[in-house]
Image 1 (cartoon, rainbow, N blue to C red):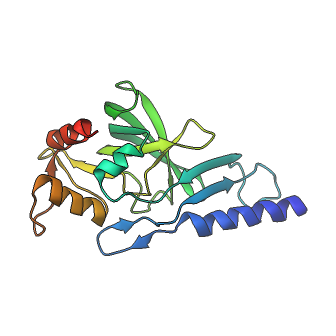
Image 2: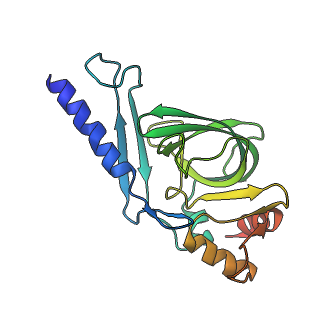
Length: 203
């Protein structure tokens, strides 16, 4: 009985901490406070949710002021295509991404990695299947999974129709305006190759 109470209490804490994003009309702003998220589930029949798997730990840090700072504090920067997304626990989605190119780190082309995102499969911030992105990701704590920097701050969706990308948060949109001399009333889209060159050239 005590085991059941402890496990359910931890799972409840995850649900409170895990969704600390502030919604605005057209984007998600990540929380500024660093958080250590732990998701705990069990195969025990005592739990309400059966057949979910053991423990997953991830360190979700605060955001960056601009692209230069985010590159410095990011383990890997990749161009990838989303292959699948599955609800791996009540509060997290496992997203499989195929590597197309690596801007920082040592991932090989065509390598498939798994990224853990907080939310449910139909959450707005979950990466879309068959879509391409440039992603700023860090290693998940005690795991071979990855997490996206500052929730969605490290997500740059690619529009394959015109080979452009855009930012997901206001601070990164502002930096795109500054770096690429965009006008704020424009769509704030940047050519993918120009963005890649800028990121790879940063010290």
